[in-house]
Picture 1: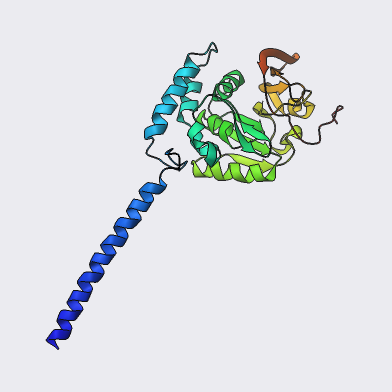
Picture 2: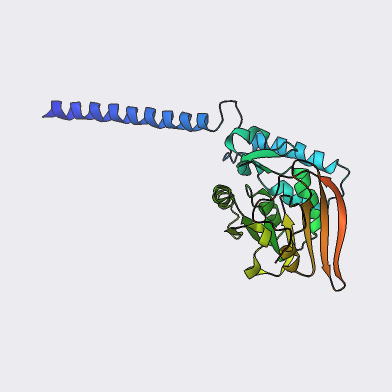
Length: 263
């Protein structure tokens, strides 16, 4: 009987040692999985070590540009984890100041352009803003960081689902999303204080102008696909619509049931 107890103790000790080795192996595996094969931190890495350095470099580049961008907009861009809004294979490029492919023939916009368009929109906390073309969710996140009440429309179902996952995963739970043809806006929620279009139609969508409140602004790139487009700031005033040319940009085309003659 005593011999059986000794045997049981030895077995228990061996089991405990085995469990410690299993826990250690699991910890090592988690550490290893925190990086991609290239040594780049994974997209859900919250340590922010490598990302912090890259983010600082990106913000310095944006600040050094010739564009006049206010500190609130710069701070909003800086707070958004861009690595959460790119494809896994592009995580290492997340904080480069350039657009990146996100699938379905679409891109996540260049951070400088996002900052520039957000600045031109001129929104304040609490403003209702409609975004046309959710994409990966990056621009919507910046608008949310500005304190806006964000409504976003995406026509491509796969991107709509992915952007919702990205935004919820990053904590932007208040953004309202819809899968639909953005050319026609979101009439049930109109009017809006601001509308921002992140793909280029070949003409200004009249349904969107009608969904601007008086004093509201729309930022929209307009022009043919495959070439540079003109970025316009359009304001709804008491005297009618006023448009301002903000310069040349390049966006993917706006897709959907665009009509040369609006209803």
